[in-house]
Amino acid sequence: MSVGINALLRQKPDRLIIEPTGLGHPKQVIKTLTSDQYDKYIDLRATIALVDPRNLSDERHLENKNFNDQLASAEVIIGNKVDQCTAEDIDVFNDWLTDQEPAKIFHKLVKNGELPLEVLDIERREAAQEPAKHGHHHDDHDHSDLEPVFELPPEKPYIRRENQGQGYFSCGWIIGEEHKFDFDQLFSLFSDLNAERVKAVVNTDKGCFAFNVVNRVVSVNQMSLEGYESRIEVIDSQLMPWQDLESILLKLCGLNEA
Image (tube, rainbow, N blue to C red; front, side):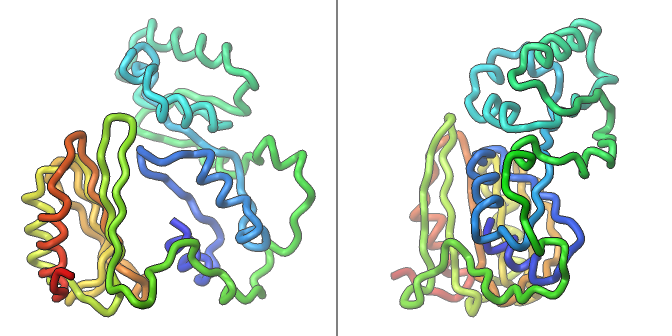
């Protein structure tokens, strides 16, 4: 996350909207964004959670720690898909809001994800208790001192990390930017891969691309992040043969398995 944020901040945007992975830990994301590393560059606003009110009656969601943590961390709650909800679903949503401590700053029921744009400017509750930050509205800062929290060791062409939790297994790779993937072969691999999610920002022979794969449906967007390592993450509810997948990935970028 830090690598992507740093690259975007160097372009001096007016606003960043960050949507973490569904397996992400919102408190850790907020901790990172409010750390000294970003103190001069980011004016963090209220955290927003988009929730389907029907899920508040589903024990599978109510017993899921990530689901509860994301709602607990959010200061703004948007109940989406209201056109598909029953009157009982709406009552459950309103009762849930009433029980929240501390109370949410703002909430609204919408359909089709029609987020009210004014919620993007709502200030964080914690911000009122923090010392005033200076300089984050200015355009004249040198962003060259923003360094990624995690880096590929200079002596290694790639690294791999595995994780598991909440009933899911994940494996991620960071591969040096000098190693280019064959775009067509990588697209075919992601299309055939039997995993619930694949997320990647990859340097290819056709440029840098972001891949987002859900149940073998591949979405691709060209990126302007050349000069950064390729990053690939695969998530599934079953433990996958990571070593076999790694061997294929290394071949697609011209690396021989170490």
